Amino acid sequence: MVLYKVHSQEHRVRYFARPCSSAFLFQIVCIIFTILPPLFTSYFTSGFYYKELSYSEQPSVSFNGKYEIFIDSSSTSLFSSSDAFLNGKLISSYRSSTLRTSIPRDIDGDGLIDQFTITLNIILLESIASTTTNLWLQFQYALSRYPLLNMEALGVILLKAPSSLKDNSTVTIYGQLRLQQRQPLSSNSDYSSIQGSIINYGTYSTVPSFDDILNNYTSRNYYTTFDQQYVQWSSIPSTQQQLTIKIIVNNDLQSIRYIPNYWKEFRWAWIQYITALIPFFYIINKVKEFVFSNGLVRTVVHKSS
Ligand SMILES: *[C@@H]1O[C@H](CO)[C@@H](O)[C@H](O)[C@H]1NC(C)=O
Ligand SMILES: *[C@@H]1O[C@H](CO)[C@@H](O)[C@H](O)[C@H]1NC(C)=O
Image: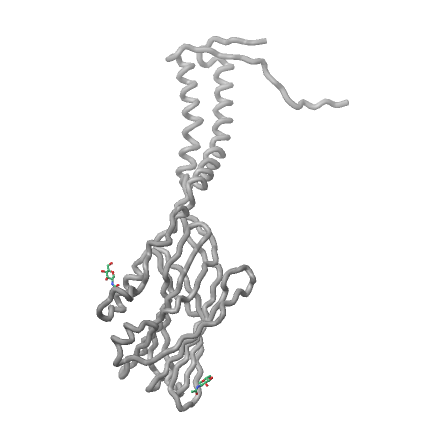
């Protein structure tokens, strides 16, 4: 029968030396060269910590019923909104509008809303052909996986009406609300209350500057934009001038930038350190074995049998 060597154990040999002797200093240098290089290699290759990571989440988006419509052309400037105060202040350009929302749809059956429709109907006294429409919609936008975020979010839609429109026009917009981040979200912070409402209807005594509101909103660390995917116009002749705006809001997975929590960072740093430590540990041990067994430094040798 052939025998294979499975393990060998050498005689236990112990080397002793006085403090401050060359052997003692050599041992200290070996320890330093085992511990420090992995620290430097890990640090200088990628850094120990993740500066930021990203993950995907489908946010919870709902329409909170607030809207403003601005219709402008060289000769007209029309306004309509869901707020009675603003409508009253801008009475000279006010046109009445009605809002209808559909039952939200959960297309893939995962319990999150994937699509909903907002329909706005404005009764007009003039043609809207060749006008520009700015539509502001206010949503509630929430994330709930790592970082908690719940904020009022604005979607601004810009529409240019074709010149060939007839009296009864319909425009259908498909789009999606997207989170914009100046900073990554921190996974152990709660962003439920920091952002406040976009338009503080209660605090204005005059009509607020909408440019300022938009400027303030897009200066936030976290805000949203509305990505227009498709826009389609149609119109038919009628006795009544009106515009129907149908907004189909799609909602799917979005990539969110975030800073991981302490334990995730620690684990990553630990893995990097240990993987770099193993080869250094092995090499330095071989060097020590060579130096001590060949008597390159002076030691007192004890052999146990
Ligand atoms: C915009 O932000 C500034 C500073 O926070 C504030 O004073 C101002 O009232 C805001 N404007 C509007 C229209 O909300
Ligand atoms: C306007 O058009 C829509 C759809 O095309 C139709 O349902 C509605 O009855 C029309 N309204 C008028 C006043 O013509």
